[in-house]
Image (cartoon, rainbow, N blue to C red; front, side, top):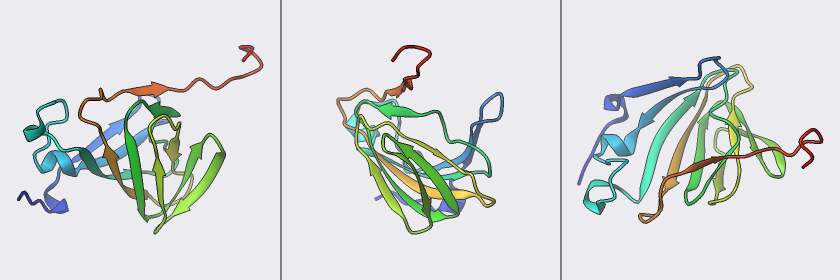
Length: 143
């Protein structure tokens, strides 16, 4: 068995150059010994578990889709906005939501307090971990 306490998991802060995107992540699976790039089953888990905090006014990342990865979210505190093909919904502490492979999505914090959640990403062993940006059709590009 492997065990870790959240207080001992290092924080990783990511920010985009222009400041639109930003997050602080604790990669729990990595702290438990997962080697993210390895395809050796003894060095990886079939999932990733992370604790993520999105500060006020920041987006996690652009609207995107995963080719083979499913993601399960559980909101711990704060409120956030979640965009998918159906539109935008607000989520809050206690809400859980799930995206299957191929479902485009985006998360951000449009509220005054930090948006904090756990995310479990289920990653098939044979699949390459790929994120695919989604192009939004507009009248300008004729789509």
